[in-house]
Image (cartoon, rainbow, N blue to C red; front, side, top):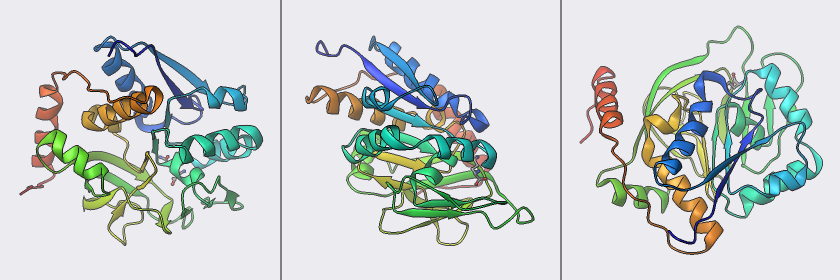
Length: 264
Ligand code: GLN
């Protein structure tokens, strides 16, 4: 651990993209680093930032937003910043992108009202809102992380299959192209309520519809992000010291029971 100087977390449009408590993901990453004496800096990535700011970050967090805010972000995220963000994701910088964020990393998003908005196209997916009268996908969601080697690494670390518990609230439906889904839905709607997939996983970027916020409810994902970011940055194997997650584990058990999910 002696080589670690700093983890720089880039937070996409903090004031525009943080619905349903998504800022909790940033707080969770920050606290889990601080508890281990890993210095953390949070860098807002927003209208005031330029491409160079985007280039500095070791880990990226993007939250959800409603259509109106999402459109403002998508219109701002152009040029050098868009290129820097794409290059980061393509280059293997880990990230967690929730709900509205994956929609803007895909090819396009068709909002409930108005014109199609072009996305960055870094994730091979599209998202469409069926219109203001269509019902939203709302509720608790449970899914199993499936892509290899991510699923294998997490399973080894947990000693059991990596099950995510979250909360979803989206009007848009996402359809994947060649990109791998993040997981298979056990309870809830997932990407579109039809194909049984949840989220997407590309390079080291996690895209999901799960709020919750996601990371405090599923701390093993937070640790995977921290560990992966540090390994990428310092090009050395990093082992994180364990933390006491017994309270979160109890909350997870209670939630699975409430949702009547029985894992084998
Ligand atoms: N605007 C998007 C939708 O309704 C995203 C919502 C969100 O991020 N919670 O599909």
